[in-house]
Length: 131
Image (cartoon, rainbow, N blue to C red; front, side, top):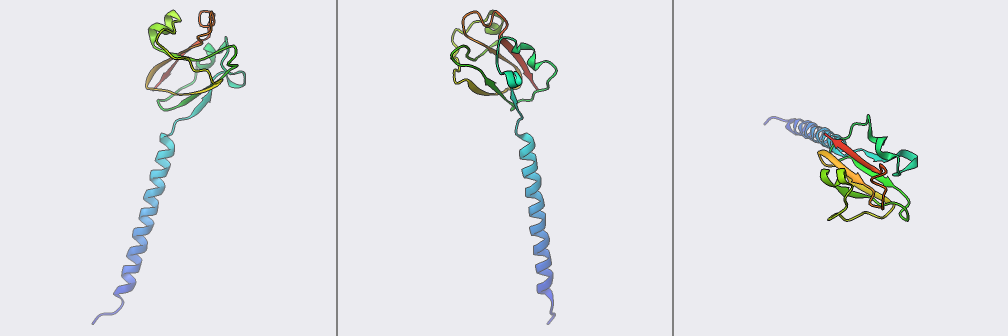
């Protein structure tokens, strides 16, 4: 009867475990890559009347998160469609009022306005395109 077959099985088992660990590391790395980035709108100044240009030159992806920091006694955030963005209308939309709202971007153009009277028409609105 041949001897030594047991050590070959141990080596094969170690190779299989090592391969599985490598596979799991690759999956975890991919999951991390799929997670979106987080951006603070307006940087340290936050969401304010001149925030519209903040997004210019930035590249966003679906799944990225925008954080809108603002004084809730003065401003709010309303996620709207293209028509409401153009007309500065909040009809049918629920304003976010926490002062630190997080919004996950969808693929395409995402529209945001401040619903406080006169703020959107004064320029407190932003369109962000996510690929």
